[in-house]
Amino acid sequence: MSVLVGPREEWRRILLEGTPQWVRPEGDRLRLGDGRFVAEADAVYLPPCDPTKIICIHLNYESRRVEFRAPELTTPTYFQKPLTALNAHRGKLSRPADCQFLNYEGEVGVIVGKPMRNIGRDAVWDHIAGFAPVNDVGAQDFRDTDAGSMLRVKGMDGFCPIGPGIVRGIDIREQAVRTYINGKVVQEGALAEMTFDIPYILADLCRHITLLPGDLILSGTPANSRPMAIGDVVEVEVTGVGRLTNTVQEIPAPAHDVGHDPTDTDTVRRVALGGDWWAQQGQASA
Image 1 (cartoon, rainbow, N blue to C red):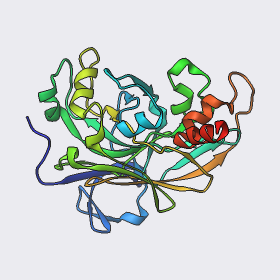
Image 2: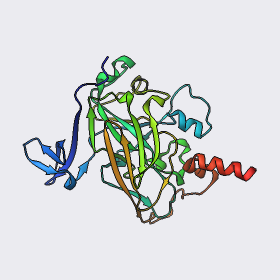
Image 3: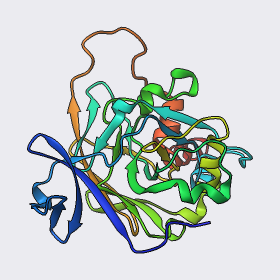
Image 4: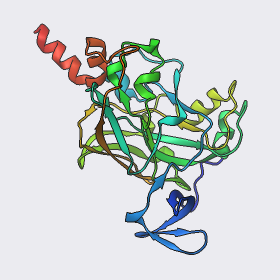
């Protein structure tokens, strides 16, 4: 069994002259395969993977379970994001004008490297291409609909930024994930806190679902997911891997009123505000 520990290796993907290019970071420059360099500050990033599916786990950090006062878990549950949710380093996160609870969730993304079907836990590491910071963005205003699938909550366009690159050669088990808003740490958790570790998650999923190269698995977020404001710069850092940066912007509300509208209910606020909501309830009953 390998845990991908070796010399650290990072690949990023950018758009250059209308063409996707894989590059290697070297200081403040990116090296193209043909030997040319691009200034990192000028790069237009693309997601560092081409998944056929994006699968996410619910409530996988003990701190988040405690924050929500949920019972101890004996088996994981999952949901999917559409491929159109993919976004990249330095991309914009768009909050519709009729929504107010756009939450960050810093996570470690696992990118599959080889086909996986009915692979046991001990073999999982050998089937992983690498890791990347991911923000599992969600418009919690839609928590009152979709029967728990979170299709509209987590599946809006651009709600899965990943990057800047894909990294291997580090022991991901020893790392931590942090989220920053405008430079301030607002969320932090060690991967050792996970209820179900990465080999468990992938082995569980591939018992019945073939995972293909490029597929993206989101491994959960720690406590303190909270709403972002328009103009916020949100960053997700995975130690040893990298730091993903995005900026929140507002876009118009949908042009028609078909379907479920955003709501502001106790269910919505309980998830969007997490421990802050529980504290408010305690104050109200005091």
